[in-house]
Length: 196
Image 1 (cartoon, rainbow, N blue to C red):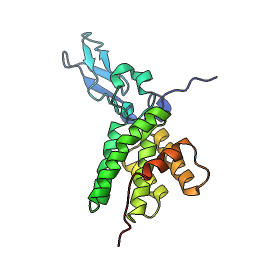
Image 2 (image 1 turned 120 degrees about the vertical axis):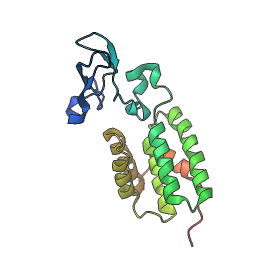
Image 3 (image 1 turned 90 degrees about the horizontal axis):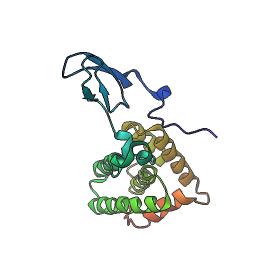
Image 4 (image 1 turned 90 degrees about the vertical axis):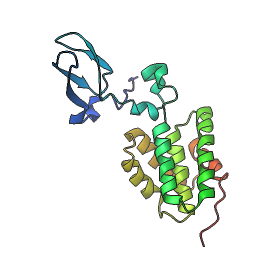
């Protein structure tokens, strides 16, 4: 059995921007950082230098963040994608304030459901958003919309794939599995009047 490696730490997925040099604030020597380095010792003066570009963004969506980063990741997971999806909701549906408020409440409930059921939050709430925007006739295709928004938000590859797979399954209308059932039950809590 192979151990699964975090895509963010797998160098096959890195770009040139993921390895960079920064000056040591103590002596001015150059220190080569990888994006996953939290802090390194300067090779010249041995001062411990924090990585100025270290990004814990993965901890905001990854279901394994606590296992990877420890208890420091608690509470960070999913917040940035959730907030970005709420911003998208407000931008698209600002003329439906009652729906916006209902969807925000459903996003909160989705956190509880996902924690209880062991589901990843971003695909669930992204699909709720897409289906509500479709009901409001603000988008044509949830799958196409999610492909666009996933790229716009720079959604991590695993979360993006899971989101699109879930949207496709929901569009097919087959017997729903756990994730589809979660989306459908959350949608039932939002009352949408058809636009005139």
